Length: 282
Image (tube, rainbow, N blue to C red; front, side, top):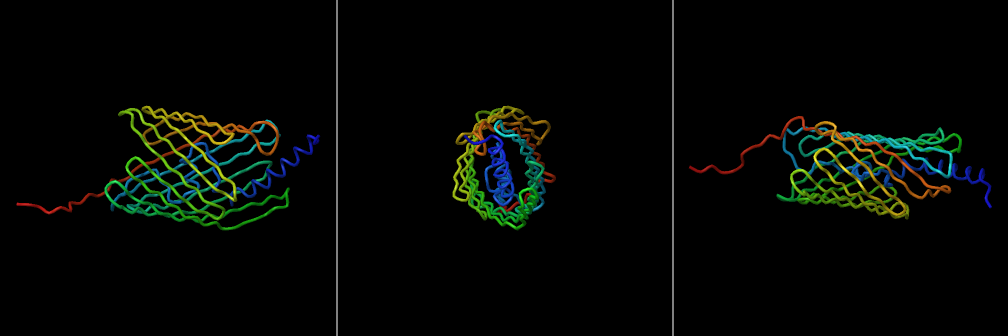
């Protein structure tokens, strides 16, 4: 049998190595709610599905903080993510920040993204985006230090009640699809499927959101992973979502549980300027 202290030390070493890689592998599915995962991975992602004209000004802020517990080891992992996007007509530009910490060590990633909307027809539009992150890891205990820049490109295609996403980064790619269905004026269903291939590893994840007035319920999961959560619209265009994810821990024996709190705020500062393009008749 493997000594428990040895197993714990090996688990900590592996965790430290993985944490050191996380900013560089930021394409990995990391959040319970997949719209936040898409915000992290796809520089073209935006919750606004319309193409706007001159005079349109909007803000979109998404934040997520989480803590991971493991019953088979004595460490806790924390992660934090923040992304702000400014919409200027057809252009959207933003900044993002990502942090992971455990065992007193930390890794960081921060960057910028730029995207543009392209109207195809009345029911379809395309958004293309590029991003550049600076990733920093300094792990004194494990003798590991690294710093590098990581570019990414992304697409978002909106067609009626559907949205399709595709992004490529240094270590792999992701594809996703979202479908929105209104049951009536008060109830709405949103389902999202997300697939990634990262350094040879594959992951398929799904979310189902049910919204009733200001309340949102979330269920989802992937292989060996289950997700549940609830959200509430605390004010106009401001939502809080508390969720949990439990799965088999790959680094040591036991289960892994995480608790996440997400915040989303979006607002239109000024409506689009509308202009008449028809031919008058007399």
